[in-house]
Image (tube, rainbow, N blue to C red):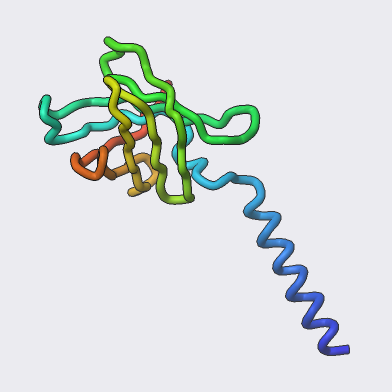
Length: 127
């Protein structure tokens, strides 16, 4: 009887943990707009506005554009996401480009563009 009680307790705890995690999808931290600074590119430092959102299937999608809004945003071809990082891929001026970002705190990220240029940014808070 003691074994059954222990087994029921373990199963109950397991179900509770799974239920608690089901409310959020992996990478939901990144959903929203991010203002990024990419340093040291051949054209100098560059400010970008990156947007991540979930589509109706629950998949992460998004766009990348310049922070000034002078050029139209480009849709990502693919987004790979974990709880603490995201990698987004798109085509810019005929080149395959990707950016990797990691969560730093509630509103900050750091990473790199093409593993060559340092990137840092903060969440755009809309009022």
